[in-house]
Structure formats: C-alpha cells, structure tokens
Picture 1 (cartoon, rainbow, N blue to C red):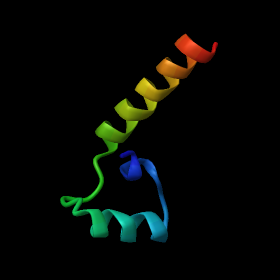
Picture 2 (picture 1 turned 180 degrees about the vertical axis):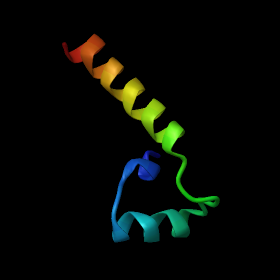
Picture 3 (picture 1 turned 90 degrees about the vertical axis):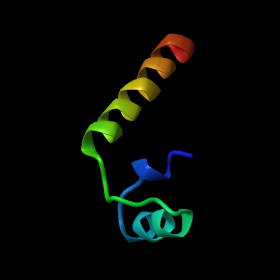
Picture 4 (picture 1 turned 180 degrees about the horizontal axis):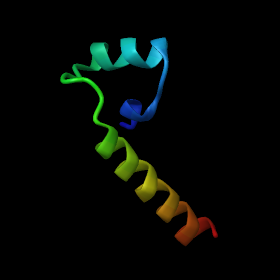
Length: 45
C-alpha cells in the first residue's frame, strides 16, 4: 500500500506493524506523489 506516504504518529506505528524498515525515503515519497498526481491528471482531468 501507500502507507509510507502518510505522516504522523499513527503512520509511524503502522509502518512498524507492516515491517517497513530503514526509515523514510524522501525521494521515493516524492516520486510516488508525482505518479499519483500524474494518474489523477490523466484519468480524472
């Protein structure tokens, strides 16, 4: 899922529960948001 995009205490706990390791990766987060918005713009205009 996209739980790595969420911020805050709840999101940090959820990432731990899901086994995300290594902390945040700002570049991956930025790329994911770009892809999401590109999809929205293309299909939802």
